[in-house]
Length: 478
Image 1 (cartoon, rainbow, N blue to C red):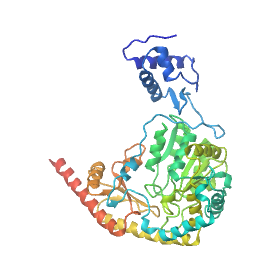
Image 2: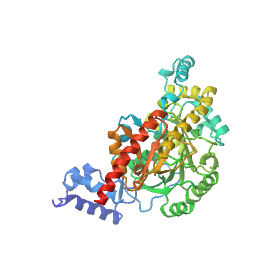
Image 3: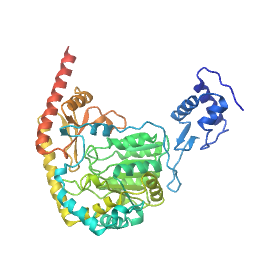
């Protein structure tokens, strides 16, 4: 039966009509709404009008969208259980990756990419292992990996984690992904529904923020500093907001370089168990320490399956291979494997085999010691250049970045635009903040530029900043 809707503000009338049906419980929680096409036909209106009404309902948290399935009634108090079977869901939120946009600008002085200068990697040594892999596995190019990852590699990683990370992960609880960013995305697909709450450190890895926003998450920042977290604040938020998970980078945090103590890691697991909140631990910089090795991962304290551990090797072993490992318990692992199968059906087998023989070789492990020394020296070059300014920064004991606070009168937005014109790049702190409020901070990566580029580029950056500072002071006095 067709219903005629009056022409004025049609989408608002459809909004009210759907909302009334939800309020009267004619459509119950998680029940599927009529498709956009069907609703348009029933009401004798344009499909775009219905779509606009549905999007407004979703924005107001009355309905949610599920990929390729349609729209469903949003429950009043959605809850999550580790034992639930969750279908991967997606919203129609716009895609964005602010960090990637900065990286795509080609510059001479690269301070925005937290990657290793290729000249610091043993490239000729890697080429030897390329030949070795083809000798050992002559059919490797004609063979797919299993979805979960090469068994030989997972066996080696299981042994490696036991010896160096203080936890045992059997091979059926390990998943190989094409880098850590894919792992973060898979976790979000499995765990998130539209309007779910996610906790992140403030500041944190900006691409993780973009991924969670892509799935329609509500993001709350937890302050991180040299002393770690305010656990009272964290517990209050866990109790009040019931987040789906807490995404954390507790070892040489990106961008601050802060490292959480062993005691707080243990306390985090206790809070996760108490409030049934998953912890997603991202650990890409563990081997890049300048003094002593960092505390064992949060995952090593987990006994009940509340922690998902993401261990990336791309930053400093061989970025071109894009290999990371995820450790977690079932049933979460089963859901992640399903999500991985839908993403790419398995990371390239040749990359896994090359990484296996390259990373676990004695020569590579020796090279890591030399790499730490080289990166420490580059950090010191950047610090020495910053010493000529009134800027403030943290001095990390590992990682690839300096987190720098500029004087308030220097607009970071204007500084970035001017620096890009001078072929200099950095990461503005606001994109690392879920509240986008850290507008006086910038992240400077010291790992990609060589020492001469660091000295020259930093001098140029400070000259540009001084020009902006002088202009600001002139306008204020005028």
